[in-house]
Image (cartoon, rainbow, N blue to C red; front, side, top):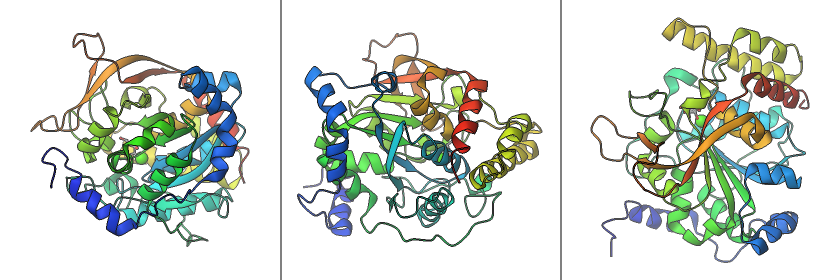
Amino acid sequence: MMNAFDPTQDRRAFLRTAMGLAAGASAWPMLAAAAGGAAAADAASGTSSSSATALQSGARRSVIIDCDPGQDDAIAILFALGASERLDVRAITTVAGNVPLNLTERNARIVRDWAERTQSLPVYAGCPRPLTRELITAANVHGKTGLEGVPLHEPLAPLAPQHAVAFLIDALRAAPPHSVTLCALGPLTNLATAFTEAPEIRNGIREIVLMGGAFFERGNITPAAEFNIYVDPQAAQVVFASGVPIVVLPRDVAVKAPITPARIAPIRALGNRCGTMAADIMAAEVAYQKGRRGVEEAPMYDPCATGYLIEPSLFKGREVNVMIETVGEWTLGETVVDWSGHSGRKPNATWITEVDADGFYAALRARLATLP
Ligand code: RIB
Ligand code: CA
């Protein structure tokens, strides 16, 4: 019987056929072992760790990056891979967003080649379109390939065979309680589909750190909405209603750590492959903004999310209630943040609004320096 209130019901049927969900098979026994210590301690104390707590305890965080590369996604992935003593990036899952899925998954495989993680970092392809809306992309910003600004090679290795949603379900089912951090850098379609298909997997998540939304800053795809949320507002609604701890890096903070030529120069001066790729991508982002707005700077979007995981002390925010507008004719995809607590609704996210921008770029440069 179709559930009138569950827009993803038909997608559950799709998932069962398209993925052939293997019941019981664990995708990730190593995670259970590796994260057993920290997560088991958390579970015993009944608390779920925050990034700051994780760093205090020195625990290396198991991370899955869900993304839509995408120029800034590429830099965010490199940033995370360069912080391997803090983040254990176990997989990349990809979703349609900046460009269609056939390009976002290809670009994720290209980026892992740059970091020479081809054989040790699986890339999964996920949902090719939002839960209910038609896909809109940002190819006008990121270029036809999605990685405007850098030469692209043929990826050196194929995708992992499983659908990203099936992988997320299997991996989170196998994970100890509150042990996996999901870093979401694109539309939230994969996460929402996994939560709908297997709600119990939320127990395996430590927190979701996502780039998305806008409150004090206005939208970048419509006057009211930021791109990641606007592409799939229904998915965002599922994620923000999930009860999982969420940290949001919105446009509000991305515009406070702008990319500028002066900040690109020290990264280009590293002279390594990943520093050069990041510098070329950032230069392309600034060039786009110069052409469109006449200013030589660009918001630093997705790397703020991985930067938060690596150095949370560089950021400040507030626990608030965030609701997603899913029907507004002019405000579809707006993140309605109850900053002053007027609504009486329970907080469901930490909304980051401040960043030490110079500290952020110093951390980014230091991490890129550790890569090939
Ligand atoms: O609004 C910025 C977000 O949309 C970033 O994640 C960028 O990659 C695009 O996906
Ligand atoms: Ca993105």
